[in-house]
Image (cartoon, rainbow, N blue to C red; front, top):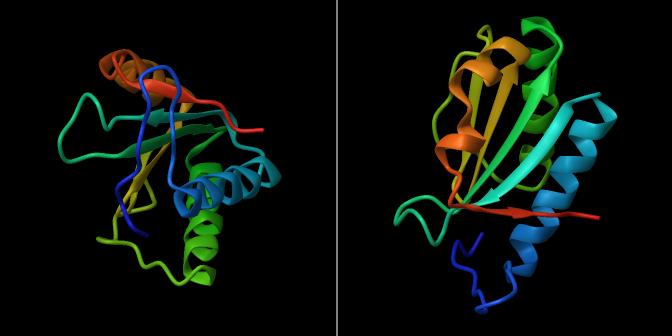
Length: 127
């Protein structure tokens, strides 16, 4: 992944390679029944983070399955996770350079409220 994307004043511009990864990841999560999938563009509000994907699983077991499928997807694309995290948790973080994926249980997502914490970030709508 190139890591840097350009943005115009009124429209979010995402590098085509990163956009393709986001769409593929969203499909994997949709197919695995993730809930409330949100993509945030953090480039204008943080100097070292590009994109967050946030989603919810029904249980810790479901979150673990979501993480496993996302991990397989990125491996198929030739992208390795930067650091392996525990998947037996109500909050799983998967770091794939430009895209950091947060998989929560409902209660944990409501508690940490990352969307509210990063309220200045723009949300990316994917078809």
